[in-house]
Amino acid sequence: MIEFFTHVLSGVAVGCGFALVGSGLVAVYRVTGVVNFAQGMFAVVGGLCASAFLAAGLWHGVAELAAVAVAGVVGALTWALALGKPGTSPMSALIVTLAVGFLAYAVLVAVFGDTPRSSTGLTGMTSVFGVPIRTHYLLVIGVTTVVFLLLWLFLTRTYLGKALTACATNPYAARVIGVPVARMALFAFVLGGILGGLAGVLVTPLRPMSFDSDVSLIVHGFAAAILGGLTRPMVALAGGVMLGVVESLV
Image (cartoon, rainbow, N blue to C red):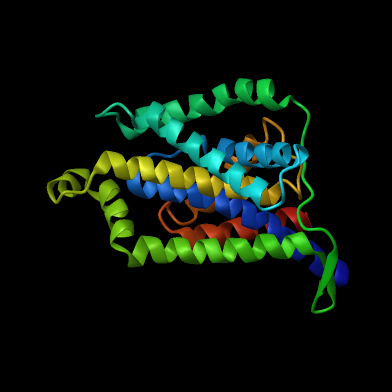
């Protein structure tokens, strides 16, 4: 029974990483109506950068924050390629994000090589109701819980969050009332990059990251996000956790 619950808790932690990738998809889709298939690549960038920064001697915390910031910049570049030209349709932007994901393979191999990388994360073991678990698992679960709570509050309780949603629901009306739709789309892609980068930073100590790890991440993240119709982050969280637990038990 202890072994069973150990697998469940480890699955919850991995599922939280899937959910964070899914939350980036939700953030972009709610604002732009675009399914961003480069979202998994943001996580790969975050994970590989964190590993490289730590290997270069940066302190824990600084290295992870810098890696998340790099992923946010990559999100902005993806927006420029996908939606930087006014009038681009969501379908055209979707195809561009898919192309960006494939193009990123060459860049990532050139910068980081094709060998999987990992990072240390939090070391040590702890006990939850008598079940031994790695301390890093608890960090992943705790950070994900806080991030999803803040994301839900931001999208549903703040003026900026509601303005972001209005951009996808009715872009014309949003422009009429003075909402800068293009700027909101840029913000959504940066937010997607940050959420994806955070997923990569948290998951890399659990699963070594390589240039093509985005395939697994985007498949699981998309599956988690689609449960909520690509619009509800809390449902994406539940979907990601469910996928992680099922995968761990299998």
